[in-house]
Length: 316
Ligand code: SF4
Ligand code: SF4
Image (cartoon, protein in one colour):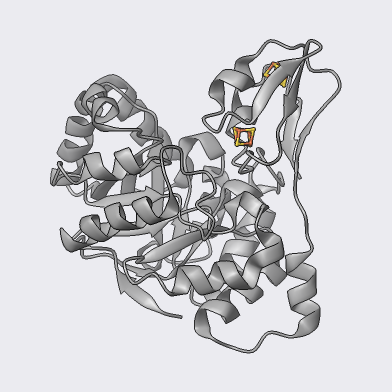
């Protein structure tokens, strides 16, 4: 495996990060035991960097993995939507308790759009920085689907890491092109920031071009690591081999690149519209009293599923 410094944080991460969203209840819905087994297998192949979020509901999966892998051998990134001291402490304590750890390597604010969003969350940021000064958080960062989010992070030295959308098509970037995102990321890297990309396959929409997606990711020198959602041993093997430049058998390539995923909305949808409001990508709308999805815009993040009161949205 290739290991990189995550900017100036002092944290060393595998280039291939394990995105845990896809194993949790918003997508594949693996048990904690099954999820932990996948993490354990990825670890055996050199992956030490695990990404989660309060939203993903995968703390139990990672907590189970921590019973099998020494804590200091894993780098755990999590994120939440806290906006105040109280909500920041609640989210942080939930992460510690459910993961069964006494520190988090990288804690981030989730889905930050721009400087105004960051200012609006600054009480939470101050709280996280206080936890960092006590050694309970090793580094602080933000995740963002926006170029303006990365540009805003440039103005805040306390934001040590950004977790942006990074794929060859720019799929999911909300406010500009892939080229503009690359320029912002290069500037963040030049400042000494750590960059941990997400959605390298556009949430699965770019699976048909998986080789080109990897070529793109591996040719971006500013990327310290990239989170791939992995749901099977085959996906782990494919991704590790690809990052390492190892040969890949045709049978494995076919299996991984043809496992299509899509957002499914059950027919008991009540048309409340909560999912439409949640989707930053404007991929959902109401029609005939029910939610429908525009698959050309959907990046399969599954975030809409988390707000559906009827549990009718799944990605599979
Ligand atoms: S429709 Fe749902 S899964 Fe698709 S981009 Fe929007 S929030 Fe994400
Ligand atoms: S949140 Fe659920 S019930 Fe409401 S419109 Fe969306 S899919 Fe339908």
